Image 1: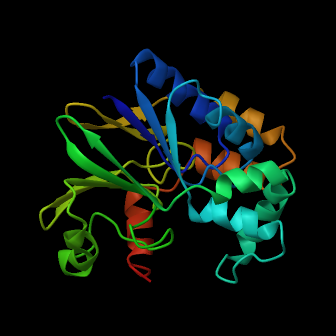
Image 2 (image 1 turned 45 degrees about the vertical axis):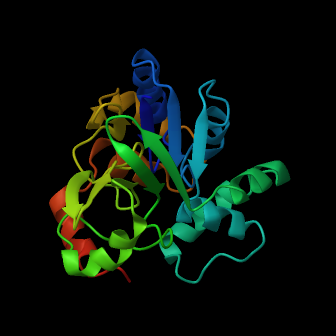
Image 3 (image 1 turned 30 degrees about the horizontal axis):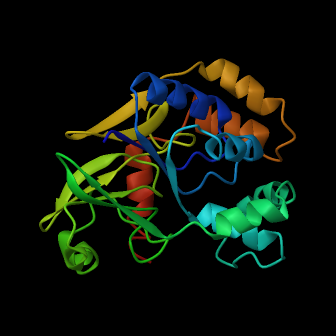
Length: 248
């Protein structure tokens, strides 16, 4: 079984379209959409796309999806930074009751058996919740209490928007990166699992994508076009920033 894991799309429809073109060319048998389709400049359109791929698809909820649903009821967490609240509310206003029911039914984790890889647990941040932060540099001692009891070969995660592949005790932990909002060189990052595990990066027309984002009514369209598509922050910069928030 060939599985594509897509994380942290964040409403970047051009990036999603480019990745899905590769997914289809690769003859993928199953897709796992692992949280944070929302929020973002074209999140409504991205949601419609992933819900109708024509390929067997499993979903996992992310903190962005969850907070967007909460915003429909004026219940967004106080932990959401002020700078993100307007964009989440904008996305929330585009959702229907049926969307809310669908997204609310997405689980925190999904486990699949993949020949050549073994038992793989997919989660958004960690298997405990959709908000915990860790990186390639986080000490094993902090992580083993989370991963050792799982009894799986591999855990695939996202949330920090940076790809990595590391061991935590006896568990291989792989971050798929972000399709739509990378903290790395420009492009769309994702993961392929088949007889092995392959970190993938898809290039796409960045200038055209930025133009499409700027044509939306998204409240932070220019910021997203510049900082998430054309000139995203570096992995080194964000790793340093996240070091202050590990597992908090």
